[in-house]
Image (cartoon, rainbow, N blue to C red; front, side, top):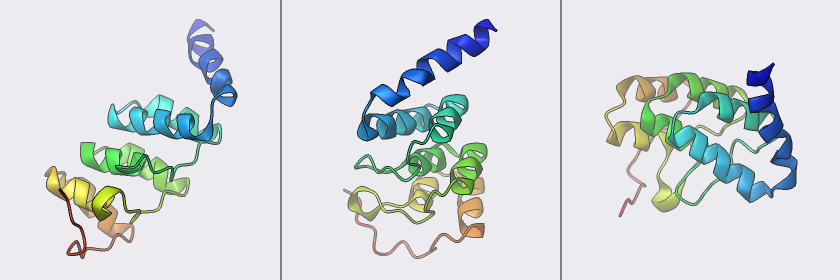
Amino acid sequence: MALFLGIALPMLLIWEITTEQRGRLLWEAASTNNIITAEMLVLLGTDVNYNFGSGTALHMAAYNGNIKLMKFLIYHGAIVDCAGKFGVTPLYEAHENHQREAEQFLLAHGANADMSQINPP
């Protein structure tokens, strides 16, 4: 019961924050591989495609090679080719960070393999 309250009570406060704040929390959860928090945020209605300027939660999951989180996000509507800053896609993040399994996963789920339009800094 204590574990449930430790997770559920803070999540009940999610309705007190803005859409942007929820999107940022999802991005941060994905960037730190915090799957439980990411899943709870999505299940409570956070937009899986919230773009935090530099990218979405899917960008961060791909960057980290977190296939489990990538599966969850795509299942809940994440856009596989969503472009972040400079046109960077989740596939590009996976490729640049040598996350080969993540690259293959994204390609298998419809990612565009053409990265010639991406202009990173």
